[in-house]
Structures are given as structure tokens and as C-alpha cells.
Image (cartoon, rainbow, N blue to C red):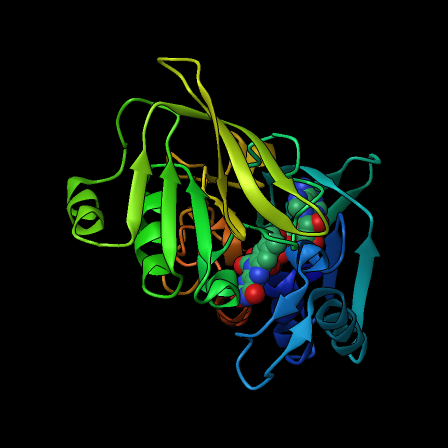
Length: 302
Ligand code: FAD
């Protein structure tokens, strides 16, 4: 059996695997797609100490770094079940069952898409999901935020300090965000809120140039010119497969303590799949290191 089995090969999983392997213990990593979300990222400018890099380049460096150590890498394998017996068992979609003394879950998350024409075509060409990451790219320009929940309104407030103007589009007749956020938003001079509107299309040529929406009460179609669209309708953790085993919150995030421990002894978690509030590369890597050290601590005590 493994001493540490990491499930997920993004920044959190890679960091956990390196920290575990450096303890000289038997370490494995299973990943559906090594690299994770950064494989879909173009420019990265907030990975501290690296002024600018690109997602696939960072993913290649992660893999190269993991390969420096004696880590059993099982790429293109999806885990479908976890069970705690004497050891912890992780069953893969291909039927194989891996056994380990400890497991680190780092299966990440995915942004919910609006699913309108233009969204996929202009991803990284004006369509963005992370204001902390991509906000500064739109300095002095007009942008829209789709979604009037807490993340949408937080994004709009954040962006209003950087860009020229922000238009918020909310499908429902009312915003769902906390009232303190709504009050803050309405105090800003360069924000317009459109409620009860349905996004129809994100338009563009080689990059985004606007958004078309329908006023739901009148049926009237309108178009605004802008340079960027931030989709903020939810981040979904990849934790469905843990239903009924590891404790998760209402959003499906794995509940961890400050050592990355879950409710199951020997099972740890790190990165975007957890209750860790901010979903970023540098934070995921830190939490991967924390979970690996937590797992090592657990191993020497049990
Ligand atoms: P992920 O990167 O999501 O990795 C999850 C891993 O688990 C993957 O290997 C996946 O294949 C695997 N997996 C999932 N389910 C299973 C399963 N059942 N079995 C086996 N493996 C599984 N952050 C920044 O800090 N700066 C940026 O500029 C930035 N830009 C971004 C741009 C975009 C378009 C996106 C989508 C995200 C961006 N982020 C950015 C966020 C950053 O990518 C994430 O915070 C980070 O990748 C999270 O790392 P993670 O390891 O927790 O999860």
C-alpha cells in the first residue's frame, strides 16, 4: 500500500505529492488530467516570484518537479469511490482499487458556464472567470459580470476599482448577494445593475466586443459594447464521488481543519475542492503542502 495517495493532479495535488515524497514515504498520485485548471489558463501573473507564465507551461513544470521524486504517477485515471477500512481504499473508474494509509483529496473545482454562444469561443479572449486573476487585464475598459450572487457582486466591486465601467447582469428580478455587498455596490459611481435579464450571446471578432441580453419582462433585446465578461454563477467542487463518505458543506466543498484533515481519520484534502475560501494557485499549493505535512504527522502517530 501507499503511505500517501494523492487524488488530483493540479497545483494542490502536485504540491502535496512533492511534500510527501520528500519525507521518503511511499507516495502515489492519481489524476484525471495532470495540471488541472491551469491547463485552461493563458496568462498567470499572480504566481508569486514568477512575473508572468502560462498555464500549460506551469503544468509542465509541476510535472517535471513531481518526477524529480519517487512518486507513482497514475495520469488519466478517475477516482470514483473512497472507503475507509483498515486502510483507505480508492477505487478508480477502470476498476482498480488503490490502498493507502492516508489519502489527500485535491480534485479541484470547475467554474459553472452560462452556456451561451460566444462563451467557449472567447474563453481567455475576453471571457474570464476569476477577477483576482484577470481583472487587471481590463484596466480602463468596460466589462460585464454575469451573476448577482455574492461572488458576482464581490467581483463587480473588485473590478469597479480597476476597470472603467462594470455592468452586472442578473437573471432574477432581485440580486441574491448579501445586503452589505449590495449597499457597497450601489455606492459605486461606475457600476450599472441590470436585473431580470437573460444573457443571449457574448459577441466578438477575434476577442470579446460586447454582450447581447434580453429584458425578460418586455422581451426586448439589447446589446452593450464591452471588452470583457466575467462569468460568476458558481464554482462547483469535483466532489460528487465522495457522496456519503467525506463530510462536505452545502456547496459540496470538503470540510477541512487547519492541517487539511477531514472528518475521516487519515483522509486529508487541499485546494479548490475544500472549504478554503480563496481559490488560487498559490493558495492551493500552500494547502497541498499543509495536507501532506498533516498526513505525515498522522502517519508517525498511528
Ligand atoms: P485543480 O486545478 O482543479 O486540479 C484538480 C485535479 O484533480 C486535476 O488534475 C483533475 O483532473 C483531478 N480530478 C478531478 N476529479 C478527479 C477524480 N474523480 N479522480 C481523479 N482526479 C480527479 N489562479 C491563480 O492563482 N492565478 C490565475 O491567473 C488563475 N487563472 C485562472 C484562469 C482560469 C481560466 C481558471 C479556470 C482558473 C484560474 N485560476 C487562477 C484558479 C486556479 O487555476 C485554481 O485555483 C487551481 O488550479 C486549483 O488547484 P487545485 O489543485 O486545487 O485544483
